[in-house]
Image 1 (cartoon, rainbow, N blue to C red):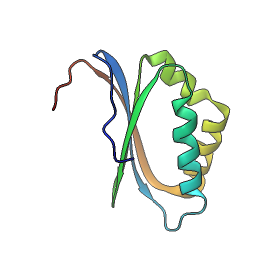
Image 2: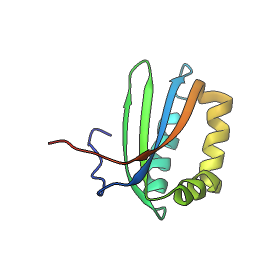
Image 3: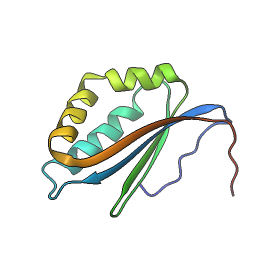
Image 4: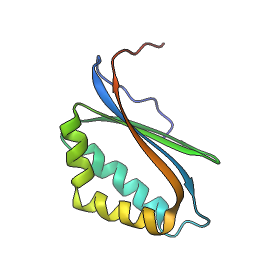
Length: 105
C-alpha cells in the first residue's frame, strides 16, 4: 500500500497495528493481501495505509467502533490473527483511536 487513504470528514476511527515480524514469509504476504481485500468488503471500512521496514505500521480506518468489533470477529480475520500470534509476529500492539480532525494537501 503506497496510497494515502481517502477518508471522509471526521469523526471516524483508526485501528493502528504496529508490529515486528518473525523471519521468513511463511504465507504472510498472501494472507496480508487477502485481509486487505476482505477488510475492504466490510461494512464501515473507510481505507487502509501500511508501511514496513524494521517496524511495520498498518492503519485501517472505520466508520464506528461497531464496525471495528465486527471486523475483529470475522472468522477469516480471526484465523489470520491466530497465525499472526503463532508464526508471523514477534511482537505487536493494536491501538484504537477516534479521529476528530484531519488536514493535509
